[in-house]
Image (cartoon, rainbow, N blue to C red; front, side, top):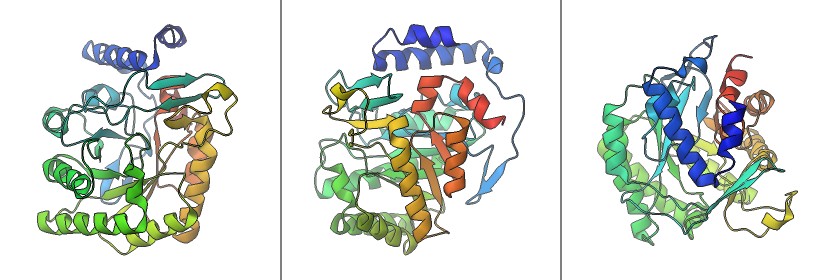
Length: 328
């Protein structure tokens, strides 16, 4: 496995990502994924009325379009989150837009919600064979502004809610211009009104999470927590990538635009999880950011996360990391 990972690192990160998922897909089709499957089955976890195979899942971005649900599900994850998906297909930002930071065990991406559109994802959700929990992470198209940006989230909810177990509203990606402005009090009030109206109209009884940035002020975070606690929104996902690159060992990347993930994100993510738990012991919370080992995974649970997601750690360490986390 390490040989494969080393070979993949020869390629640009975005191409390597595509190759690795395609390889995983082919291995699964050949029935050979058992070499990665966990020998020990964890006890299922009941959370928000859903039964999770374990508390480790994929973060959004790994499988943007739901093209790899079956093969990722076969690796032993407790749940999968696909997306971020937007109403209309879009190419995302100009390439190159993904950068490996080997010394920092991190990744900078400025992908910009590149995806095939909500209709493509729904088709995949209708035909997959994975028997675990699936969440869908939704976003707004780059071309949408003002009121239309909120309407994009509503359109995605209308099309996907019947085919997913939960929904994540992504208002914290740094790679769509001004998207993070949805986290300020004026805009998030408008967003929550629209979301709650749709939940009521469609009689949605599935969990809906808000995914937040690690770069917001504590006042903003407290405001969002209060909004969630006093609304039909279920919980929070902490956190998205950070734009803070001040701690990087590879200084040449310190002025690169985009979101930073992996090991450099861990402390920021953990600090925010702790803050959310300090304000509210009850709010449903999924922790993500900087999970590179079993220790990192356990730390997020110990800080109060109900579930944990992984992305960069999986890319850096390979499928064996899932085995090491779940089987300890």
